Image (cartoon, rainbow, N blue to C red; front, side):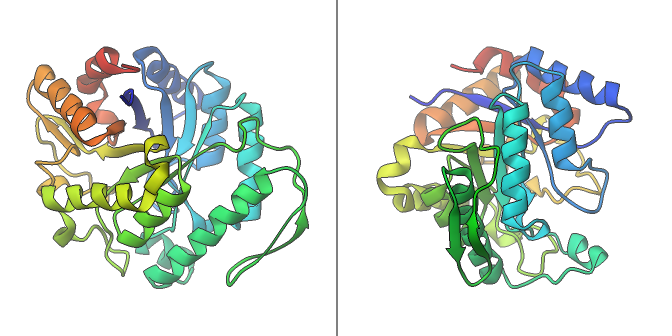
Length: 303
């Protein structure tokens, strides 16, 4: 049986001390991973600086991205940054990677937002490049989007064969790629092709269960080695949607992305999704829910 692991997304702090305090609180509560998002707009710290600071002020807490936008960095640059952070954190990196999707990021920075199929194909090549550069010896690659010539980056990551790789998304292309290449699959709602937000037609229990089935089929013999997870967007009682957040929990009440009710209700629901559907990696989406969710983490973490 898969054991529970809990992560929390932390976006900002007013000082280095405040950031360190947040990281240490997560570690003391039983969260295993601090995750930092990757957007160019909105109130969010830059991920690699923030992850390094969090790793340096804790001893067990793992650090990661949810998720690094592939379009913002060449995979050779990302491989170098992530290998360095894995070394400096003594092997505590969990790299989350996605295509990049939010239209506001692209328009504000003057970046072209390519169609989803192009971005997913580019992501697939990036995963190949990352794994190749994290491996031993020189690596070469020639694809439609990237070209690498006998590049042997040093240092290599501490974790072998590479840091844990998380791929997240809601569309069939990304989920199929994740099932075949990732260590952790984070299931979300499909995003509109124009990058303006989640596709409301993809909400609800039936859509969520179909994604689980897709991942199981696409993973094949890898399935038992995968960690399946999702982001918990509401805890205890329904709260307002933050103006800066792209999360849309309005149609997700029957899925594990919305956990309402008492502490016992929430614990029972998480066990239901773990025991019945193999979901074990749960990400707290909002810091505002930390007080309500901490007792659940303390009860279930690692079990």
